[in-house]
Length: 211
Image (tube, rainbow, N blue to C red):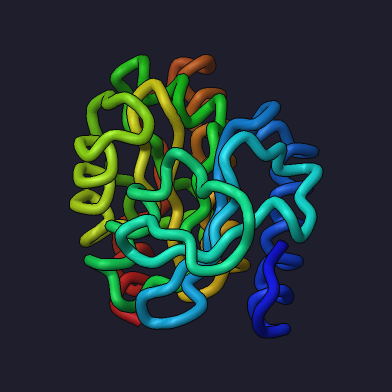
């Protein structure tokens, strides 16, 4: 159980609500996926290993340092803790990492296609989709490659695995994850209809990027 400040508990409640919504939307199954929020410069509140995101309670979170040492809570951190901490280390502006397993995004990537941004929300929230090759979960290779990809992208597809979406808040990181999957779904439909070129207008996209 998290025993320290109320603000850490409130962060856990926010992540629990996101986890429940992600499961309802089919963005993750069973005990897949993991969520975190930076609660201090070098402290991260993260879901514990083996937790189901639609059943998160106070005992399903722990606080770790960047070396994975538990500094609060009784559980063990997710096996993907390195993915989270190394992203925070390279992105000082990021305060939340949302790791899910969105089916359509992974399908589009497995087909060797790019996820196309088609709406103003896609352009505004996703902006750019980066990707990495497949690496086993919990490994240094996965964590380092995803962190590197996140240097200039807020949404990263990890091949045959999942996505890592980041933001200054948990709500923004999750909003990006939702828009990423919607963009993938629309990309799939366009390819099913034989269209390979439609995308958000480039001139408008550049104006959004430079806001």
